[in-house]
Each structure stands twice: as C-alpha cells, then as structure tokens.
Length: 206
Image (cartoon, rainbow, N blue to C red; front, side, top):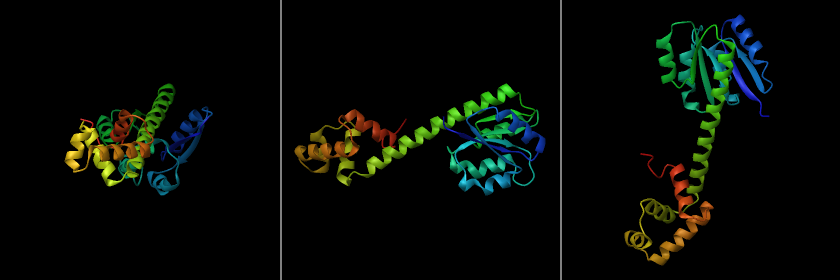
C-alpha cells in the first residue's frame, strides 16, 4: 500500500499532538508536523505530494498566506483549513485559494478522517488528470509541423481532400502524414488520435 503524506501545520502544540494521535491510527500515512506556516514553506521544495491540515490563525504566514504561496503547485497538495467556530468568511477565502475543505476546531474525529480520505481521493484524480495532459502533450510534441496541421484539420472534421486543398498538398500526401502522425501517437484509429488531441488541449472543451 502506498504511504501518503499528511502535513500538520499548527502553532498549537496540543492541537498538533491531538491530530497526530488520531491520524497515527492510519497504517498508510506519514505524519509531518510543523509549528508554523513559515516552517512548512521552508521545506516545500523537498516535500512529497500530500494532504495539509492547515491552521488559519498562526504567527507569521497564516493559513491563507500559505495557500497563496502553494497555489502554483496544484495538484501536488490538498489543503484542509482548520479554524475556530463561525469563520464562514475565512472558509470562502480559503476555497477561492484552492482549499479542498474547511473544518472548525475542535474537529470531530470521524468527520476529520472522512475529509482527509476525500482530500486524497481528489488529489489522486487531479494528479491523474495532470499526468494524462502531460503524456498527451509529449505525444503531440513528437509530430512535425505538417503532421500537426493535418491533425488540427482532422479535429475540425475535414476530409483528406479538403485538408490537401487547404495545405496545397495531394490527398495521398495527406494520407502519408496522417499515417505517420498516428504511428507517432501510438494509435490505430482517428478517435484515439482525437482523444489525445483533446487531452493535450488542441480541442476546446466548450
């Protein structure tokens, strides 16, 4: 089973200890506590992807400040903001900055475990989506300029004759470029090629 990292960022020693005690019952997690947002950010470059239990009200860089500084790393981290009761405005700001969830302290143990589980599921989905995009873009990058032009017109639904006319080449040459393009993409059908084009961002999602 894959070990998952959970970063506990809270300046309150008792809160940190309580969260560690609760989460340590999970056999597949690595718990990494931090006393401040600044201490957490200092190690950010060497961290593995994971879930962050992030206190809002801390000396130095607070929870929202941490969120602002890790936005560009999405989907490496999934943050859950922890704060006192009745902080709805803070929750809204946190969600706008990319937080996955918001919990009031003291946290119900069952709710906390469910939220952490959900956060990891979201991270898995987002990271898989990013991997698909990167793989598709790498495949498209193998194509020549002409092969990309042919693919772009196939995306638009153009027939070989139309593509040949637009590119000023013969339909036979279009077929050769099309065959080479599909070979480089590692696909056997046009629908598979279009799926890669979509994943790479060549087809608008509407």
